[in-house]
Length: 313
Image 1 (cartoon, helix red, strand yellow):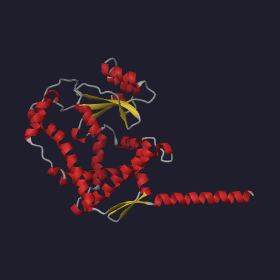
Image 2 (cartoon, one colour; image 1 turned 30 degrees about the horizontal axis):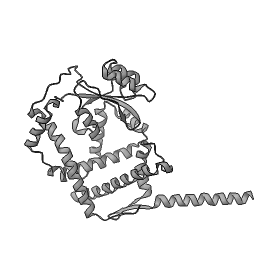
Image 3 (cartoon, rainbow, N blue to C red; image 1 turned 90 degrees about the vertical axis):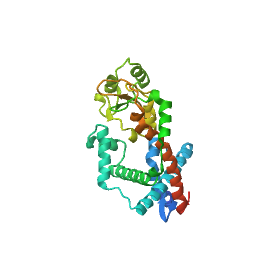
Image 4 (tube, one colour; image 1 turned 120 degrees about the vertical axis):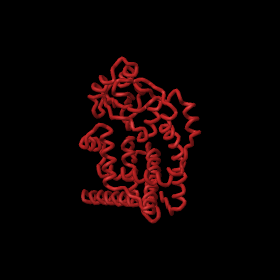
């Protein structure tokens, strides 16, 4: 009897294994003849599910997981289309280009190469995968600059109108640094954040005692603000701040809470209003980005129309 049960149990395991193999080998989409398997898709989406603490086997979280898979599939399709465009336009990103970008990233955060790689490892990100992602992003940017950026025009009249409407917030941002406090999960971060914003507790003291951000013993300074390299969320946050300001609490990587400080390292937090000429490059970037995003959407749709895309999930 035990032998029969063992055979039945083994058969069940084999059936499960075959079903799982069939699932991951299932084709999610075909783009211009190139296959995207469920395994590829799940691997691509896994870091985001991990970040959001989602379990695809949990029925209660199935809807959220499906949405992440759909978004990931769209991104993978666009990656293939951009790779095709890169070949057509004879564009490439060299290993040296990737090295230079990664060097810029860790130096802007006042980190060594070793510290940067350790930070990636702590987030379960392999360096090879990170480099691959950087290469894809840089290739997209290069194609966008060639095919989208040249079509975007910001007129002097638009710049002047924006300046007049926002003159009071056009502070001289040259030489500004940003520093970050990433609060330890067990720290009473809401109370500390309130004290830091009100000036009851110095930024450096809070950073040394409660932050887990790199170089917290030096206030978490990550160097000069490179405005055109900021993501949309951080740029929008900093643009509302004056030199010397500390932000409200905000989530970092969806896991811990933090604050950012905008300041001049020489101690001078004077808020001088820029002239129109001084503010023009910054305003141009502010106005150009949404136009470029709109053009990018049009360009992406154009690529999709020209492609043969068969989505099978």
